[in-house]
Image (cartoon, rainbow, N blue to C red; front, side, top):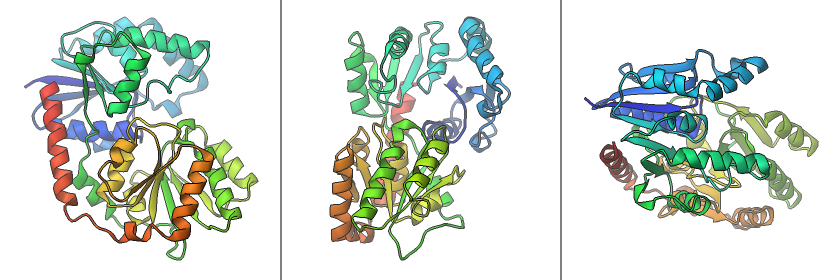
Length: 373
């Protein structure tokens, strides 16, 4: 039985983390699977099959570390990277998979091996930002990616953006594989009875995401303010947590939207919220693919998204609307659709072949991943 190790920063709630848990559970039926995390714990850890081995560099979740411990953790990864890598890999793995950009990708790149894979979930041209620090980080990561003999991208646009940033990239070693989702688990968890905040008399828009700059929630707040001023009343709910929560809540309160733009916090099971909202939104500045959109599709929800790489997810899905990725474009698009009630046909339409499509997609993705491994 082939031994595979997947590396990721942690198993806290997040898109890539959910994908990895579902994928590892599926592959553990045929492979000897180990998951390495830099930080232990995480809400998703308990969802792993019992036959999956777990290794953690630090026994605490990142959020439980003190400021000094976080500094020490970063320095340890930098100074003792080779020793840490050798200690992990002495177990002898046939395939090493760095499943997320950043620290794990740099750690697994210590040594070149015959089957080393880097999974890229985000738009590499935007994650670094700007300035000298961003330039250095991008340059250093480029050296790390050269040590992988296979690069996997979750969207074609991500792959193209990567090749624009790194002109040296070997395109023959690249592959696009959509995010794997256990659709039956999504449907099952969506039916768990949950107390929900939605009001049937109002238009309930929902986003599930980390509260980080990429997700453009600061812009979404301004959009709702404009909609209110123009006489279009909506309730917007955000499921998730992150470093921007305090600033976002402050902005919400200062703009007088406390009752209408609601941060619900992190939910281990977001699927009842997705299933029961009126429209699912992902209005990010940029996206890798937007796995949560796939989950919304499984639940047959109308989707509103901005024009990012996530539009690949909406291809062929007739309940999706793509808006221009700027303030005016979002406002105009929402006003046009909500005023005319054009969403009505989206709400009522049903994809009769939804289950068949989900099953075929799942089988196709797993087949591609097995060929890769």
